[in-house]
Length: 90
Image: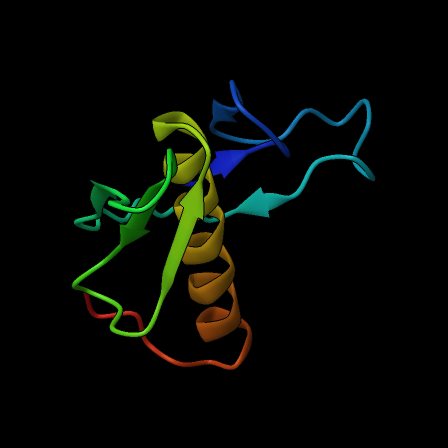
């Protein structure tokens, strides 16, 4: 069965008929990628990259900001792969 609803906390099964225009069958996929975050030697920032995606990197002033920026970069890349019907085999 697929998850129904547009966000977190959706339900599994048949959609409610009360609001059929707001409910759609959605496919949920989970990916796991290795990300390396290093302290930049020159300043007080952090550098993030993924060995899975050579050439994709990000940075941030804090460790959390670098992590979130890298997550966004990977999400956009995977979204682009899926939009162009390309596989993400990692």
